[in-house]
Image 1 (cartoon, rainbow, N blue to C red):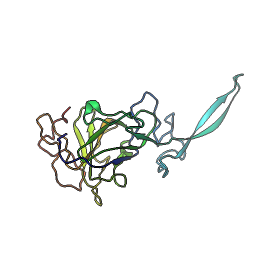
Image 2: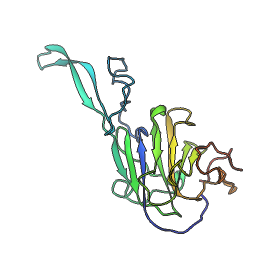
Image 3: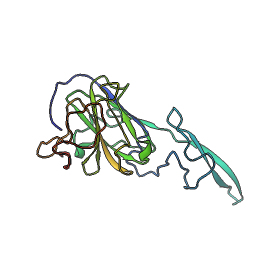
Length: 224
C-alpha cells in the first residue's frame, strides 16, 4: 500500500453476510440445512434483519436404550461481531502476510476497530456464499474510506472508494468469482494498493464505482 495523507480518527468496517472466518468448524450456509437436503421453507428465504433466520431439519432422537423417534429441530445461525483489538489483540496488519484472521464459526456480522486516513487494515475471510457477500463502511466510519478485496494470492478482485451517496465505501459480490479465501482491506482515501514495482492496482477515478483492477499494476498482486 502506498503511504499518503495524515493520521486522524477511527472507523468501523461493517460486513453483511461476508461468510465465515477461517476456522476448523463446519460451516452452515444460511440458505441450506446441515445435511444438504432441501426442505420446505429452508431455501431462498431472506435473512432476518438481525442477521439470522431460523431453519429446521428432520431429526432422529435416540435414548440410552436405543429407542428412537423422528422429529424436528430448529436453531438459529447468528452473525458474530469481530473487533481488531478486543478479539484480535491489536492493530490489523496492512499486508497480506500480517492480515488479522477473525476466529470463530458462522457468518461475520461486523468488523470494528480503529483506523486513520494513513492506515490500512487487512482481514482474512472466507466467502462461503458469493451472492450474499457485501462489505460497507457507510454509517460506520467517520472518515473517507476505501474498501478492497484481494484473492488468496493477493491479486485484486474489487475496489470501491465512494458509495453513491457517501465518501464511505461499499463492495459487493459483483466481481467475486467463487467461494473461497479472500482478504478484505479498509483504508483511508488514496491509501492505494500497489504492486512490488509501486504501480497502483486501481486508478484513482471514477470514485463512485465498484471496479475491477484498472491501474498500471492491475495484473500484479499487491506488494507483500
